[in-house]
Length: 326
Image 1 (tube, rainbow, N blue to C red):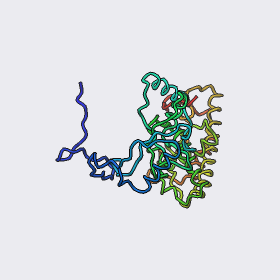
Image 2 (image 1 turned 180 degrees about the vertical axis):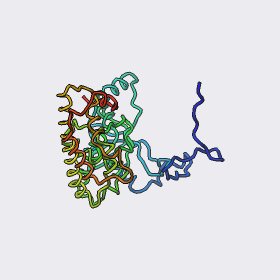
Image 3 (image 1 turned 90 degrees about the vertical axis):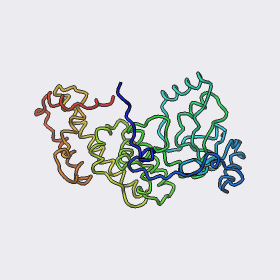
Image 4 (image 1 turned 90 degrees about the horizontal axis):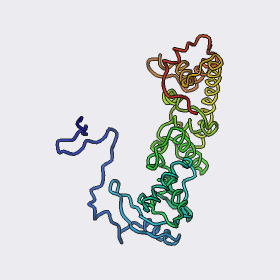
């Protein structure tokens, strides 16, 4: 059996830090994490609010990495709901959770929650919350965070179920819209942790208009030319909607090219991937990629002008890649 690969360590025997990780954790010993009478004022106020809302604070402590205060609480389940910009709940995943909880008769995975106007929003617990409600529980265990901005750190916090591209994109789009509608003056560059990458935001606005968009086929090219938008989020929303319209126009051109190829008798599941690869000039370019609008204008024009008579079956076969989504 091959020996398991070990992570590099320093001379002291400690694991080396991952590239890009800058966190210096607190030096608190376990007993020092417990909060008592020395809890910050905002924690004491939040504790009183939870009790007034019908919940129960079970513990107050500091998390061990950043030393941020948290409350471990039991909350009335009918006062907890997902953040309004969270991805849609997967019925199959909820079914899996309810069956596991029914079999074990246990709930051991607290959600994260933030309080707002007497209710609690969870950025990472939509599936668990739905499962607990379906099973008829009256309470749900939660780590209640005093800082409301944590609710927007969806992608970094979500541990329930791996996001696919569409789910990620729609979540960050909903988040940007929610913040913009709330009058936030933050910029996209203030939210790089929450938004993850510029292409996700543009794809989110495109998916919102066309749920069956083949975003996975367009993402590699989009990542090369999309970037963060200057100005506050209301300005960013307008520009993202414009960029999404460009992507949707390209999607229409690709779909038209695919239909032409099918009419010629080509039925490969890789037709869309083939068309995108065929019209993408980036694979032949050296140096910096062209601007967003220039690239997609070129690709759209090439897709609309594609001559199916010049395409051979073996050309498509060599494309490979993932089949088109059903």
